[in-house]
Length: 278
Image 1: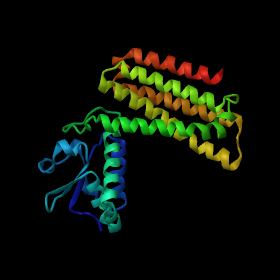
Image 2: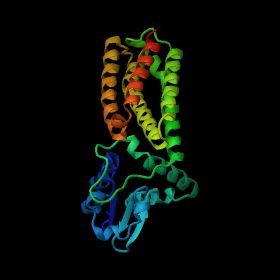
Image 3: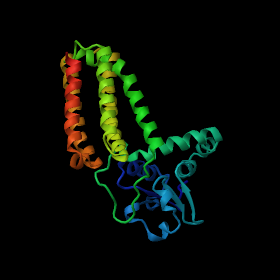
Image 4: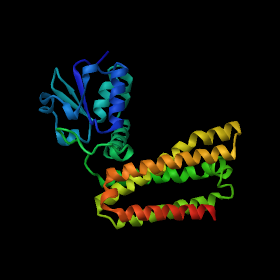
């Protein structure tokens, strides 16, 4: 049954937030009018919402009782309206503990995961608070994922491309050197700007590796391994990531305030390619 009396208020500058709340409407979990953006939300709804909490944990307002659910409780309330078992399982203490922390890691880093095209909204600033702990954990998680992907990607993609002479060990060395280079740049920036920069470049690397996976699986399970196809695919991904780098650096402010960081990044990437093509 639809949650007809409930309205979710989402960050419309966040594509990820817009997507999953829109999915709630499309699947019937929320009524069409049960979704409002922070940029044009009714003032009456804002009166019952704790804005300091709401920008970090998405609020769901029950207009009948004026009760507000936040974050993982809001999501469990919506999903549980159609699948009660999800709400039951989600409220088991160990599961709730895990979901709560997973949610906070995503919400505190949502503008790193999908850097919005606009930096603000019309009436209410719903920019999530900067949280050092959750940003650091997110960076570490991405770095671990990227490092683990190096070996299967090398075997089933990079070794059968223009980088045919590249060994997994040399790719790992180049990757590690680039990570440390970015950490050095991070230390040269103000703390918050440094974390923003590191988050954006780390996410770019993760996007590149994840987008490599489809062709890697094709090569692995269908034995394609065409050098030209692999090379073109890697080149296209590289161009897309380079384009997204410009967008993300503009969002982070580095494009305008720290031009030396952009120059250093270009030098770092050049050094990376030098290491993998020696």
